Length: 126
Image 1 (tube, one colour):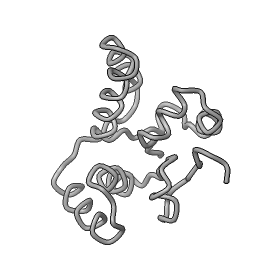
Image 2: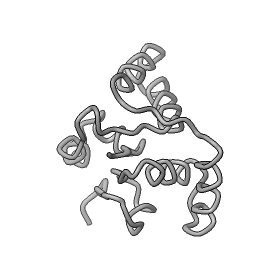
Image 3: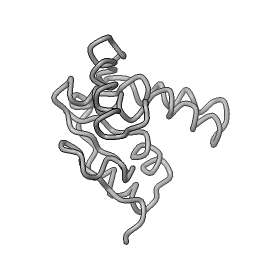
Image 4: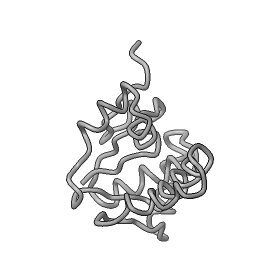
């Protein structure tokens, strides 16, 4: 199972060099776990960058994939992970959701890079 973080989705949708690498790492439909916070962030980005109709595209991406709601256990785990790893709330929710589903995280956000269970693809080669 794999959680694709918002940063990875955006790079893939932009078709950036990192996005090309992300596309090669995307799981089969039945192996996705999508935290609802990722749907929120992606819809917000899509509407801002592409217009109102882009939200429909985000909804289509969620079809045939596991969408994980934020429940009490994940929220409490996210609070702990946020404190231990100095993660922003949304990032902690993404990470906690992945852990709750036995999934790894595919991301382009550097602050995830050193965490266990993360497949990090940098936005820019250093």
